[in-house]
Structures are given as structure tokens and as C-alpha cells.
Image (cartoon, rainbow, N blue to C red):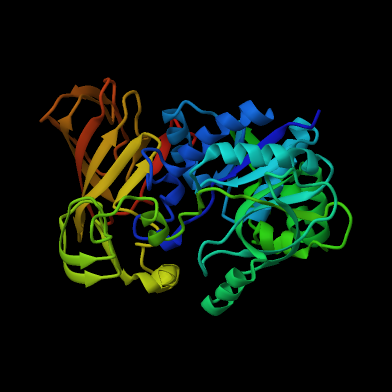
Length: 487
């Protein structure tokens, strides 16, 4: 019997090309883009069928530490729980992430077969996914390094490619094509992508990989000894916190950043014996949903080939993507454009330049702006807050606190706060006093006084919070008690 499959869900991406909806604090894997579930929820639900067909173990989820409560909340919504969630202190790309997952697998499973899956991909026919993985399982057990390639439909410049060559031997069962990897190639320019498409020798690199945990650790030790050594040290010094595993932060900060493709896959000698790299042709409805045009391909369009979402009015608009996340968005006399509105930023671009949105995000980061990272709505383990207005010496927030949850016991050195209950009931701790508030009642928290806010009810508690003082900053929080393990 083949070793069991251990899915490793890689959920650390930033999705910069989907700005302004996708931000560093709330990247695309946590968004509902083409279904009623978020992308990570769809990925986790898809694994149910994998367990039925391939006898898999509960998944390992790997994400940025800052997203740990988002992960927990979204998986709780679908009643799914990973074996462990490994928290990266800082994103170092997919090669270190998979190395941490392999170390966990070797320690707890002996030597399972890792199935590395990005958390932010669309698979329209999951039954094909199960069939391909099942076929790949036995070859992965024999020591092969396996990836999955998608037949290209157009000369896409946003994907990596895999050059293939025929595989000798009895590997193909007549349904799934298995080929040798001739080489992995980086994202091409348009002319090169057209040549790849015309040649018939190239597949899109899906970013899904499969190999035994021990094979991955051997490969990363061979090609990237710095990543191997650093991850092993960070893992050995790590700690368990409930269902979270935290690698040692100080050690992991020194880890080189690299992807599975660049660090290992592209360096494997295709003429070597096992683990010779193989590619399974994945003929199904697949997309990495990496751009607004890719998302639009999965959504319905109107008679003028427009994809419209949200509060949008158009006149003489064609072949365009127009999305509003709140306000009325009106567009007139446009063709082949993309417009995406959020409360604090608007993207306007031609479809031809949609792959350059990531470059714009890099400019924002370099200029010291914050819109690349933060939304006006911020997610916390207890709920969310949204900034309604701010200026010199003040800020107004809308807090939504889930039933049974609470903010930490805290105080602020530089600001006072005024809370007004607009929905639900609140339990307030302010200094030595504890009392309850109902709708339309308020509380004042002076500067420097310890305070806490609970939601003892069964519905979401909504609070309008007015902050005033010499400094309005999220760093001005001194925590004394916290239900969520935050410092």
C-alpha cells in the first residue's frame, strides 16, 4: 500500500496583481472571487474528495503569522480543521514553507507523500484533480518528483512554463499523459509565450507538486543548503501553541527567500535517476486567478462582454471589467478596461496592462504609502473594525465584535476613546468598574485607563468608537490580558 498523502496548503501569498481588493493584510486566498466561498475554503473543501479517493491525511496549512486568525475563522466557518497550521514569522516564498511542512511530516508521519497545493487556485472539475493525484501517488512513492502541467490555451505571460519531452516506459494509462520535464522556464515575454504555444511542447506550470517528504528534504539540502539548514534550526527551536506551530522567529528571519520552482525544480538534472522530474498533464478547468482578467473568465458577462459586479452603472461600455466594493461606480464610453473600486482606492487600467498591477504595488510600498498593505476594514480575532473618518488628533471606527468574543484588556498612553453601542449589548470594563450597555448607550474611556469590551450576546455587537488624543496609532496599545495569545 502506498504511503498516505499529506496535503500541504500553501497560504502565504500576497496576490499583488489583484490590488486593490487583495492587500497584504487580506490577500486573495481569503477573498470570495468566483464562488460563494473564499479561495482557501474552496481548497480545503476540495480535499474531502481527495481523502475519499486517495486515502490522505489531514492537511498542513502554512501561512503568515499575521493571518493566523483569518485562517482559523474561515476554516471554522466550513467546519474544517488542519492537522496543524504552521505560522511563518515572515514570508519567505514557497520553498522554505514546503520545507517546514516536510519536517512536520517526517516527524509525525515518518515519510508521507507531500502534495503541495497553493491556497488560491481555481479547479473547476475536482474529479479530474482526484484522478490525476491518484495516478501520481504510486510514482511519487517510487521517488519521482512530480508536478502538474496545464495545456496552455493562450500565450499567457503571467505563468511559468514546463518544457516537456516524451516519457519512455509504461507510465501512461491512456487517460492521463505523463511526460518527462525537459526544463522549467520563467514567465516569458509575449513573443516567447507565442512560440511556446505554437510548439506544442510546453505546459503551464500549475504550481502543484508531489513527492515524498524525505525526497523534498534531500533535494532542498542538495540545491539550497542555506534554506535547509535554517529551516531545520527554526523548526527544532519551534513551539506548539494549540493548533499552531511557530518556527523560531529569530532563526527563520535569516532564511533565504525562494520558490519551489527556482530553488529546486529548475535545478534537478533531468537525466538523473530518481527523483527524475515528471509532469502529469492536467486537462481540466484550472486557473491561478492571478489577474482581474483571469477572474472575469470565470464570471458571467453581459451582452457587451462586460463583467459587472457590485453597485455599477454603465453606458456605452464594452469588453470591460467593472467592480465596485461599495460606492456607486459609473462608467461611460469605455472599451477593454478594468476598473475596481474599494473604499480607499480605485484601480483603472487597460486589459493589456493588467499584469503590471504588481509593479504599481511595488511603487506604493517604496513610496511609504500603506494602501498596498491595509484595507480600511481590518480583521481581528474578535471581529473587524473599519475606519470611517480620521484627521489630526481623532479617528472614528466601526467595530463589529462576534458573539462571545472580546478585545484585550488594554490601555493607551496617548488617546482616549468614546464607545457608542449601535447594535447588540456590550459588557464594559473601565478601570475598576464593570457594567453593561444597550443600544444608544455610551461609555468614555480616559487616556491611560485599563479597559476591555465584551460581547456577551448572541448577535454581532456593533460599536462606533471615537478616538481622540495627541497620537492615534495602532502601536499605542499596551495589552495586559488577551484571549488570543497576542503580546
